[in-house]
Amino acid sequence: MKAKEISVIVRTNASMNLSTLFRAPSPLFPPPHSTATSRTNATENIAIEGRNLNFSITTRQGKVVPILQDCSLRIPSGQFWMLLGPNGCGKSTLLKILAGLLSPTGGTMYVKGPKSFVFQNPDHQVVMPTVEADVAFGLGKFNLTNDEVRSRVSKALDAVGMSNYLKRSVQTLSGGQKQRVAIAGALAETCKVLLLDELTTFLDESDQFGVIKAVRNSLDSSEEVTALWVTHRLEELEYADGAVYMENGEVALQGDAASIMSYIRARQSAYIKQINS
Image (cartoon, rainbow, N blue to C red; front, side, top):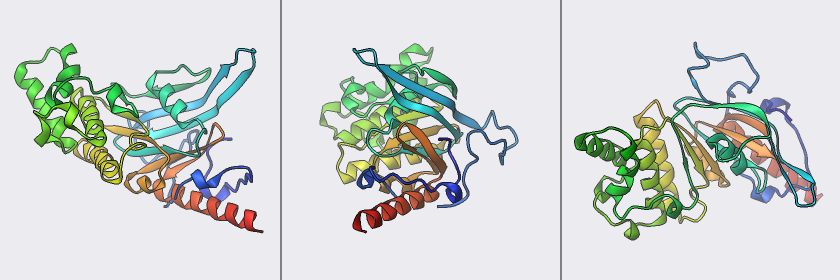
């Protein structure tokens, strides 16, 4: 199923557990195959685009199991978008394909570079003893002076609200603070696209919104950075410019965050009425 506009999507699936879904606003970004655009140069102003992406796995018994089916999406540069849907719908798999961690079995894609994938568990990514050393770690591949490294580290930590933690031991940080350090490391390398995989899953509310605000502030301070954030938490949509909603391995809808929220709320309401009737 291709992404459609709110007014024409009225799919029902009684077997779906809508308790895992989320909440939604107005004019939609043009569907993936639409030629309409409010920008002069569509190519330069698109940070992420996937067309008819497919991904499947083969079991030991030789059975092919489809995970993603004809997924298409289009994310404008400089915006904060979220990728959401019920558990098991394929959103993390799609993000890993966009990051280059998995290869699609069909379709084409474009992701503006350089890009950075931030893992759900920050301990997989934050490896140096201090905050300063960790953010500077990836800069070794660039031919930078010490002053340039310090400047990049300082700007990146400022963008995620961690400037006061420069000399802190990584081991003393909370999970959310470690996530912000991982994001700062990507920003220090001047990455153009942040791909963020359910960063707030294991965080308390304070850390959860600290990480979201860090991403939002990073984009607000640089129009060149785009972020795609996988989440299962509906309340996080309040911080997004747009969203892609998935069901059953397909992109069902994409548009501004408020419209996606309204769509999901309507689905939840219809499902509740159905089971109560």
